[in-house]
Image (cartoon, rainbow, N blue to C red):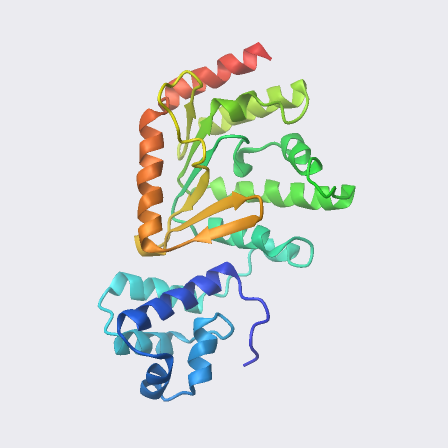
Amino acid sequence: MALRSEPTARQMRLATELRRLRDAAGLTAREAAALLEVSPPHVSQIESGLAGVSEQRLRRLVTLYSCSDHELIDALAAMATDRTRGWWEEYRQLLPTPFLDLAELEHHATFLREVQFLFVPGPLQTEDYARAVFSYRVPELSAGEIEVRVRHRMRRKTTLVGTPYEAIIHEAALRIMVGDRAASRVQLAALLERSEVEHVTVRVIPFRLEGFAGAASSMTYAGGAVPKLDTVVREGPHGTTFIDREDQLEAFRTLFHRLAAVSLDPEHSREFIHKLAKEL
């Protein structure tokens, strides 16, 4: 089977988890290869995401690694055998890989939590709002490139059909008029409409909150099939980072719950957004 030229973030996560299990077992890649009766380069290719692994071989591997977490094993087996080619594949030659990896992550998430301080979260954005965001990019994008990004962002809204979604948005993100006044008013109205959906929760952190120093806490937290397979995505000046180390995941879980605790509850958040919309 040909090696992959560009593994997806999901394929890399499977590879990473298999390497972690081997490390926890105290085995080298050469020792694991000998037990599995394959060449050492093949184990390295599996652990770098360049080669896939069958369910049978995966279960043999985790048995060799003395892993007894059956829920994790089943989740890894599901990842290994998953052949989903989602809507994001249409954009593979059109957009940078992180756009596709994020869409795939959201598709497979058991729940999604988002924290934003400067922008309305992507899955909650209107077309005009998203277009204004992409139009401000440096270096400047062409009109065609902007429209591809807008279409992709609008397709991400399908994530919110059935997947539990909770967004914490700072008042700053609601007040900054990314587009013109009319577009901002429409965006707030769309946010209010979406917040009424049963499995969607929107909370607001108001400016008036005292003692708040969490403005650097933006994140997308995607729940995995088991907590060990959760993922945090953070956007930075140098690109998108996918975080999956267990201690870091625990820190972000704690941070999200801390932010939720100081946010307005969903009902008062809707009242707050409605008031802002009337001010425009």
